[in-house]
Amino acid sequence: MPGTMGRLPDATEAIVEHIYNNKIRKVVFVSGDVHCSFTSQLALASDPDFSVHSIISSSFFWPYPHMTRSDFLFGENLRGMHRKYTSELTSPVYTADNFARIDADLSEVRVTFYERKGAQLGEMIRLPLK
Image (cartoon, rainbow, N blue to C red; front, side, top):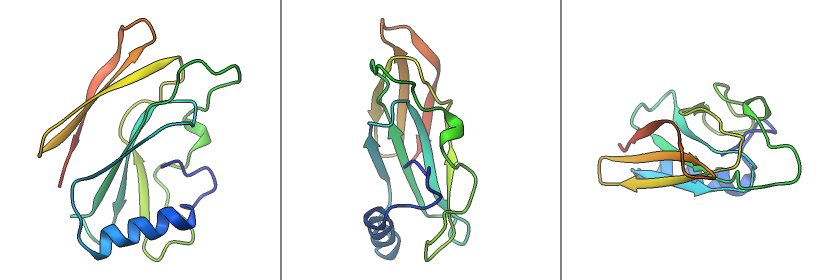
């Protein structure tokens, strides 16, 4: 969930609040269209059991500059939230053309990013599910 404006959009905030209020666990969002790839985690300082992971995979060819890590707000409280959610980067941000392979079981999600010709980028990312 990108934080380029320092807060979650209202609809996303409503979804996250629903997840928190109903104690829904093992949540992972998969999305794209930010022209880079990475994984992140939305955490809540007041509740160490709360965790929502995000996998972004969207760096196939785009004729304009790709976004970079500096385009997002990681490690900061998101403004306007009822609770103090923090988005933490859990992988490198890949800006070259790439795609992700996602494998999951009940205990974790494993994400591996590959460059467009199939060479692995970095290490496999393991996202533990609580």
